[in-house]
Image 1 (cartoon, helix red, strand yellow):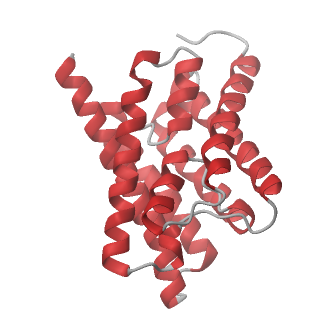
Image 2: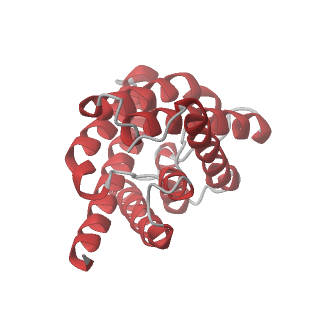
Length: 220
């Protein structure tokens, strides 16, 4: 069991590394070349999540996000005692990717750090709502046997892409404390970091609770 758990931590670290390297890298590449645009950046985030869910979902559950881990633990789909270790693995992967991006491309676009385009209150609200939508989808496809499990990666990746496309210009559409923390540390841009740490945890909890309410029956 212990060896399996450490493999799960490795999968979480690698999956979150890929998320930040590809997603943050897309922001940086677009800043320098203008080749991707907002649609390209949104697709990059969605596609890397889809790929990682397929790659490590059977090993670690492919949380890749402290908000997902917390929501699963609160809804008793994940052991609460393992939450700190999963969070540590996710932050390690995110920070490693951000540092590598900083080394390879320089301090371009603040290493893909998420910052509000308007007020912090506006971005906080958007992060809460978008993360709630994300967790609503994740709970549906990952915990309910009535959902089409084989399409989970597509549904989750698609939700991330949509959130990035719509919410990116407003809040950066992080929806993920680890995704924001890594680039913030690597770039030194952390004035609004608190909202990207707190809002996804709040939104994720609300989204998971909302699905439990509308599900109507406890899926086995």
